[in-house]
Length: 141
Image 1 (cartoon, rainbow, N blue to C red):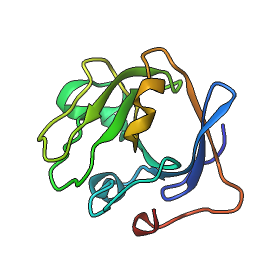
Image 2: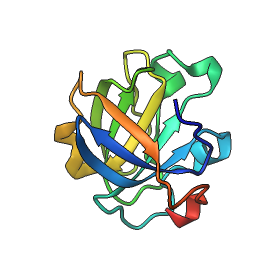
Image 3: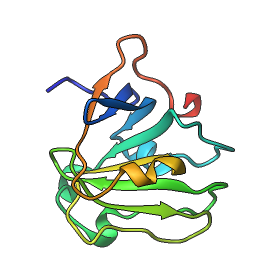
Image 4: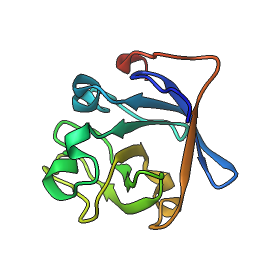
């Protein structure tokens, strides 16, 4: 597997099709905590892929939850297993306190709401680091 670092910009695929080209990889506590907060909008090509820390990988419920407090727009959220398979997805609405998966997750994808229909349970996502952009700061997303 490709070496991916916090802040790397990814290309995200669903099957053999590109889903988004500007997905920032978040594995540090700070980058996961900040998420998409402060953004006024999100283009169809943007998102974040958060890797759960070791102690939370393969967990469900509160340990892999997200909140929408302070968010200005709805987003599609998908919880993924260790192979990138969608185990749960939801349309997350602004100012809601809590969204979680009842199934074990290793990654959480936050992406434009229009992608929700493609993020069905069982869909497999793959990603690779964009060769032209690495270690993007969260505020550049």
